[in-house]
Amino acid sequence: MNRDWLRSEIEKYQTVYQEEEKYKGRFLDLLFFDNCFERSLLSGHVTASAWVLTSDYKQVALLHHKKLDRWLQPGGHADGDENVQRVALKELEEETGITDVRLIGDSFFDIDIHNIPLRKDVPEHDHFDIRFAFVAQRPDQLKKNDESNEVAWIAIDGLEQFVGNDASVLRMKEKTLKF
Image (tube, rainbow, N blue to C red):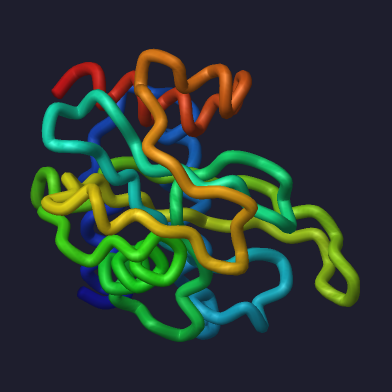
């Protein structure tokens, strides 16, 4: 997996969600920047995340992010790595302790562009997030790290209690219900 793979996958990505369809063009434009996988591209850069489910698809692993004060799926910066699936797996392990997973499907699961507010010396910018869906083979591996207030298996049916009306997370819930 590299930039060319990602470009090809985004070009052929089929979605019924209008927001994702709009994101495709912005993602493809971003991939023309040499440093789009680096934080040094201050307007926005590629990130990757993991939507990790239990084997019955009834729970998802989420963390309560300290800096953003929100419940989110594990994920983070590519930091130069063009293999976004590897980035998602690395972030998953760092943020939840989960290492034993199986990819659902044969490509990414969702794409999203979301704004990150100004923080200290880092200007406001966009994260161009490539999201992979996985099944945790060993859900008992779940543990938090110092970037999170909490990490937990959250029932898909009760997700709104944790994420409110976060459209991008609720879109992944809706996709999960179609499995």
